[in-house]
Length: 169
Ligand code: IMP
Ligand code: MG
Image (cartoon, rainbow, N blue to C red; front, top):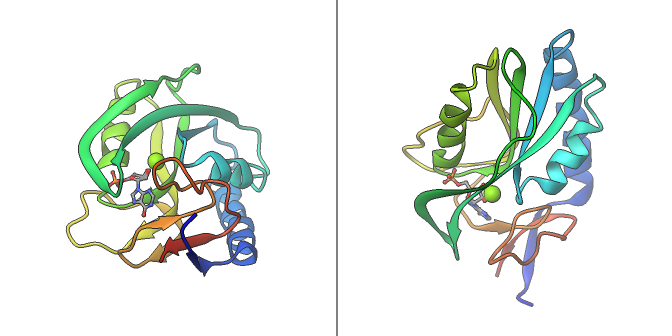
């Protein structure tokens, strides 16, 4: 294992997830909500945030990936599709990190065809990079432009189980 330098602690994540959960609970009150977690990166974040949204909701997963090593391939491979209908429902897409914005923009457009009432995005991390092609509607943290792992985020499928977020040093 490489050395990991912690940049966001387990406690800080917990507090922010509770806070964001309250905001989303207000936002989706009396709305038919479908949470769609983009796998595998949002496995842990989505599991934690849904328990802080104190509303009835449907949870589904969507598999997509674009990264090999530390660079985006610029192509998105869809691995699993939705089981649930999203037509006439409010969709909240959950992902681990918004980097270029390519992934969430692509998935948003892909799902738009199924005519949901709304589609918004919620990410754990929003990377500070120039020329993003989309912005998140909700985010837990802004980070600098560095490659991070932990709390669901991987480097070649490793480190997802770290309870905090860190950079490989
Ligand atoms: P985007 O399409 O460039 O916004 O990239 C989003 C996807 O790339 C995320 O869902 C992650 O899976 C992956 N990704 C981007 N930056 C990082 C990082 O720093 N660590 C781990 N995965 C990342
Ligand atoms: Mg991902």
